[in-house]
Image (cartoon, rainbow, N blue to C red; front, top):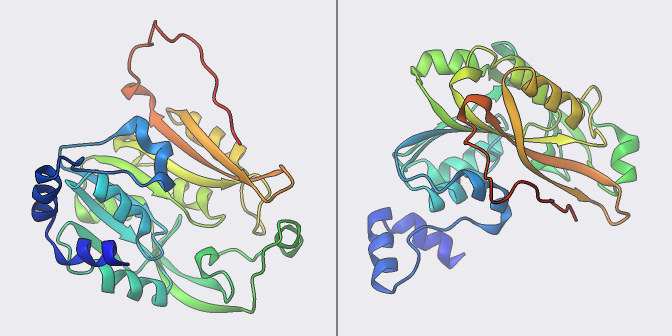
Length: 261
């Protein structure tokens, strides 16, 4: 709480000067997002799309690590958007959009899960899977929210290049990606959460997302997954990079293994 208050009150330049004075690293990547170490930190100005921002924790952590980032954050649920706006609405590096993201511009009905607001979705929750992983939706209500597409937003904002698109949209991943087809050639990296056991009706699996992006010129750099105690994996976060950005192979490390716990 105290550190969060300090970050909001003190300008970035002041925080950096204090860190340097005490011999501390000037930037830091929160351990929640350690999977991203292989693509940063980034010193130059760059654009990040946070699709499904909730209260802004992801882009908050990214900017702690990469202060020059320019964030375009999207959150459709009014209460979550208002919390995000209170925390980051005065930051000139952040553009907040009270919008959902999908494959068409318009309005959609958002399912609001009273006991898991971070899991609100445009898709209906799959009760059997929620019970299987020990989660509770609580009462489900609906609210109509405006929705855009990545392609429409990129055109509107005149975004030439996007360093990272983070997608956390609770089963709507394929809709978001289909609405971004024209923009994919200008996106360097895509960080996407996808299901192994879909929690929502009609949600794609992580394999669907993998096949879609690899067919469109991306390769999977790394991934992490989690389970609910019985070692059956439930969801995975996947980090993709556009193929034409791939560096030469490292001849000193031709082969190594990643272990998922």
